Amino acid sequence: MRPVKCPTCKREVEWNSRSAFRPFCSERCRMIDLGAWFNEENAIPGEPASPQEAETGPDPRPRDHR
Ligand SMILES: [Zn+2]
Image (tube, rainbow, N blue to C red; front, side, top):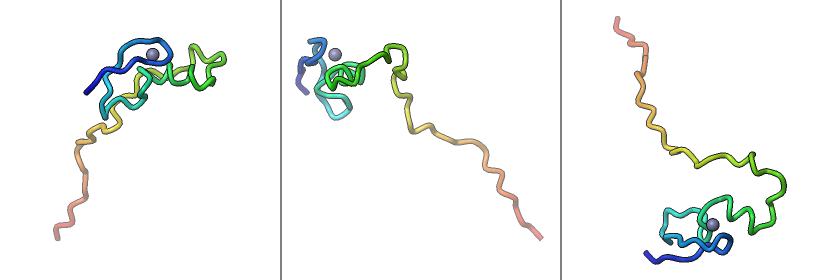
């Protein structure tokens, strides 16, 4: 792991496999750098929630016992 500096905000970012926006610190900075930063200041979805939501709900499988 080595710290890199975000090209946009110059903040030090940990460069590891989990930093999806490297070398930027966040999606926001990446968007800024890409120029895709128009008037979406309030349209940025927050930190991505963990996509692997464990759906360990009950599995109401109809049992067929005859
Ligand atoms: Zn940044």
